[in-house]
Image 1 (spheres, rainbow, N blue to C red):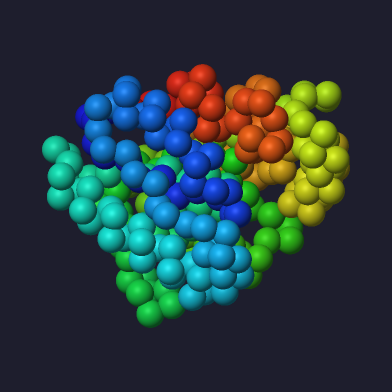
Image 2 (cartoon, one colour):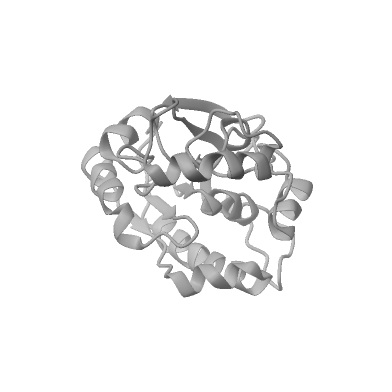
Amino acid sequence: MPAQPVLILGGFLITEEAYQPMCSWLQQHTHQPVELVPANRFDWLLTSWAFGWRRLLDRVAAQAEVLAARSATGKVTLIGHSSGGVMLRLFLADTPFAGRRYDGKRRADRLYTLGSPHTALRATPLRQMVDRLYPGACFADQVHYLSVAGALSAGDGSALSQRMAPGSYQAIAGCRDLKGDGLVPVQSALLDGSEQITLSGVAHGGAFGAHWYGTPAVVQQWWRG
């Protein structure tokens, strides 16, 4: 695929510095601009409401517009980690949301999602809305979707991962005994209709294990640019 700029939207309550190794690896290997959407913990706490989603998606839209103007293809590649991947599915849509019409597929033709809870029994109303209105790889005729799931084995991951995984998998998929990244089970992270990758030994974030989606050696496994 032709090289083009990359825009990353991180996950709930994860600080920007956690993504710097990923950004550096992508810059070195694509020789393209790589930007991270700025989001602090306060921004993420506001995402319990639609206006909180809009705050972050407005930033995505502004950065995507600038990057696309600098792109040889006229497009950008989007990467969303965890909640960020679900939000970017909404960004692609051209129907109004909270007073905005993003139609992100005008500026983006690739979407990677990393450990994103695409389906969940106890999803928040906003996540439920995304999956109801834009199920699976909804715009696959215009956007290449690639979803990545981590699969920790028994004993893998941090103490936090081992403690949280059963309850999280139960809430998301209705079963405690599943493969997943310590927070999101594989079956939830793999988006229907997308190119799908499952990586053994990969955790949801740095707090969940030594190797997570943003670890450079792991980025190399899922990146297709």
